[in-house]
Image 1: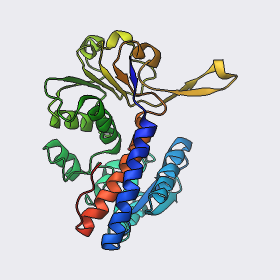
Image 2: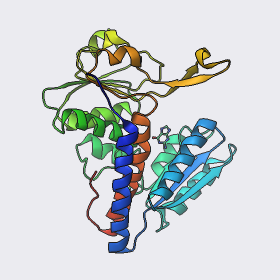
Image 3: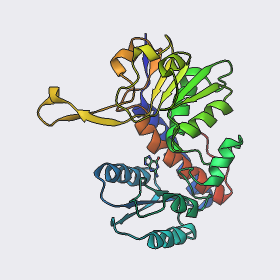
Image 4: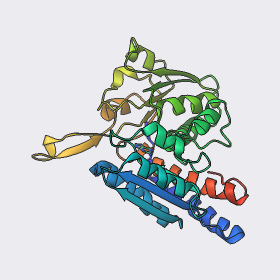
Length: 299
Ligand code: GUN
């Protein structure tokens, strides 16, 4: 029987824990975790993501501010805002939604965020900590952190002897996912668009993580029987079966096919997606606790 990994339920479990630990932090230290979320431009999908991040923060009992900046905002203005937020004692987590408009240097923006408030885990300091196994003090990027909790629930915390294949080498998902799996003792391969014999390589995987952004690219032929399949992709495709001009969300994995072969699989939607926001809340609480000198929250 294939297990469908319920990301919504797991994310709710984490959010409940965040709320509980936030109450405890407030009672013990008087500190309310604070998050600032910044979006530049009007991309509708990004607006939806950012609004749900801000809303979830309020639900967790956080202080939550959102900066909606126009598309034409110049880089200096954004950097000045980050400087203010870096120095604002009420803010413990800063997130700049990516991608940014082309005229803004994304790298410079990310490196301007204080590594102590970098709840996205994109700053060189946090990337370096994760890469050198300092997972306790690093901020880990939210999507791979969420995917890792799902993997731990299926396979345990120690992945010794297991082969993991990550398809995709992005800074946001593929590379941090590699580091997390390696830190958990898995034998990890990162495959990408230039990799030869992708399906054959993927068939070695006891744990297969798909993060390529290509709708339903991974079919049954790529999956080892009994593998745990984590689908990070969120792709919108036409759905004529639902009516004219209708669309639907699908992952990078062909879910129906993979379901027949895998031992456990994340659906899209309702899999890794909700975990990303939950881990952002977890990281923000962790940051506030750290700044308050309180013990590290556990999830
Ligand atoms: N855009 C897509 N995913 C992410 C994310 O995890 N963080 C930020 N800041 N932007 C994103």
